[in-house]
Image (cartoon, rainbow, N blue to C red; front, side, top):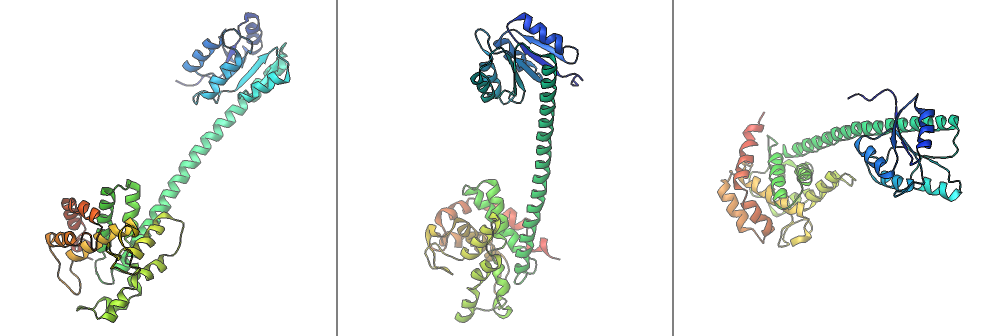
Length: 352
């Protein structure tokens, strides 16, 4: 139903003569509704809110102040301009009206030009306020859309940077995609919100970005590493944290934390800092399991791929040593999903 061209005013007064006066002044230009009590006024407003209310103060049972208070406390009606029309002349009375949220205060006996001018002014202000509110909602929606697009771009860039590092020792770059999906799955199982698990998925894709700084003759060596070579490999978490740097974005904070701690071990025998137990951030503990599981089940320059059953057996054996035992228990319960992810994002699927 289209809104009528004329604005609707509600006149609230328990004296018929006062109502007739206001109707005579405003009836030509506006649709006038009448209420002779506060209770009736509230019912009318609830059924079909007017554009403006002209409200008497001195009424039996429920005075104008109480009507105004109730309307201003209601989210659905607080926007309606209220003009008190009253014989009360004390400054304290006027102050109380404004404190309750009234838009204006007209003293009886009323002047028709003043009534017309005040009503027009407050209707115009109300229209302008609604327009501005609509504009704010519209612009906020546009900004949120732009922010989502920018955030998605950042996440894609993180993924591509992670794949750039992954290509160093995995020619399809699918390792980080699988690790991201395994990590998200385990994050959800351990109590992460969907949005947190999504961040974890993207942040985990940067876990080995530090490999960019490891020489090929060490990273791609097909045989067992010497002690000296392994010390070089052990530098990649700190290199990765340095590459990511310090940022306010939550995904980058998480990515740095993961890069730095995904080789720490539950028993304190990991690197680079020898952290143990819950001193290792949970995101690092999650990615540690996801990373090792995927590394075991994939072909690498120095080994053949393990079966999923064999990989899960090793994960089980390392609970309480390499891995958080609580997270291992959750991980073992996800075997069907792990198989699905391994198949969906296999190296064959990502091969050029």
